[in-house]
Length: 201
Image (cartoon, rainbow, N blue to C red; front, side, top):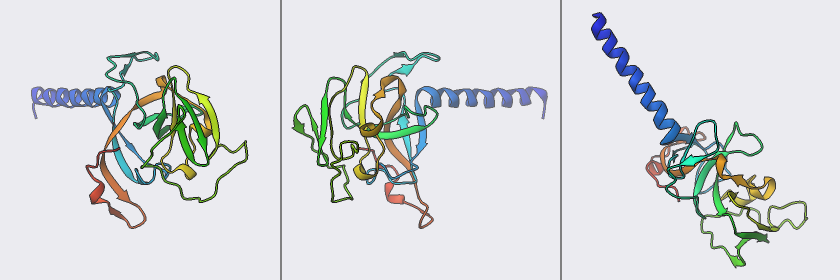
């Protein structure tokens, strides 16, 4: 191989790596679902793609966003930095946005005084926790502050979320989940082919 050809290959590889890093940082990123907090919407072993630019591009080394196409809305499934350990990523559903008043009563969620219709929510425990220091089924009311989100897992009885540790700041949001591109059933050791290509809702 000549030096000229070797240089061409090197440039092509470096360019591809740079483009991949740019896409991963600002456009789309892959995440794997490690827990059952979003059952049945997302299964353990689902691999999802996250749109990182829809909520705006974060300027490096700051919390500022530019080119904001939209803000998170109720019902969006988002990936964010876990507030108690920013090195970890969590995935939950946005239940309330800034200015909303949210409260929970016996497992039901109310936004601004109206019961929320949640066909995605799963309850596996038929009992309710009424102890005031246990916010799983009864909490609030809380007024969601500016630039904050209240998030919950769809598997309500098995999710550690805003009911326990508070709000997600907009600066911590990585993006919006939009599609399952691969799914692996580790119990039966086979892919879940029917889930591949499923849009997350």
